Length: 312
Image (cartoon, rainbow, N blue to C red; front, side, top):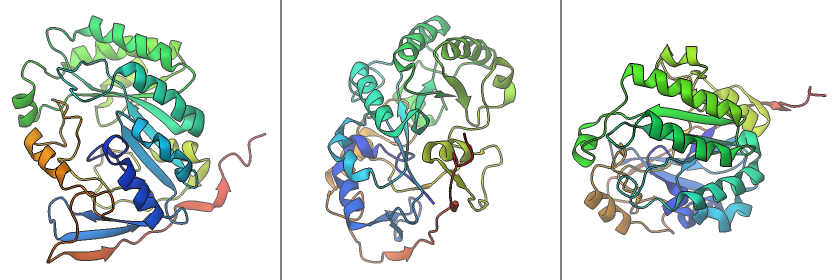
């Protein structure tokens, strides 16, 4: 199975010590975000976890613990956008994140790391020209360290309207125009532009629309062929092999203005105060009425056969 750490919060950036403690103890408790007393226990063991998938804007806090993760196969998404503190108040300087990106790439290999340039939004400042210039600066620095860049466009949730007035998703025509420009820059730097659930209109400009974290992406990252079960109630427009996420909403300290996973900063800061690095829960601990269920976990790897066995 796949364990994900970044769809609800940024665990490497803010909860690295907790995560490593979970690895050492071999399990984690995860609350259902909609039914909090329903708790799932996941084993964190390479025998059943085929890949740990990370998605972060700052992997640096986990660097002291990387050796302790070497028994797991890994896939990393690192988000690098050019926005400043007005939109990403607690994201480190991008030069530091780029340096960290390269370090992760050296450890996991070029197939084990992808760049996320998202969300893309437009404003008076953030135009086609501005995005193109800034994207090229990053792409040149990541040349040789990744072969994939996922782009996605801003989702205009009500909380985004409230937290970040003045930004908007690009129109359909603006998306096409931007895709054409970014694909050209990316290809010059050995990078394929990918999208997920953004529609088929980007395909004609050279965007790989098959998804961001597909079975094939994970297989290349871990060097193993996988046979995952068919997902129930999966979104038909999404072809990704999404893992079980062990994070929690309203806990990401980056406090980005466009964030979908945080409701508001006061809720986040209050939740972060409840974090205990020694707890099996990301936030808080066992509560009265909690019902813990052991997840059904099994490896998806096909006969432990390497993806590269037949490559000569």
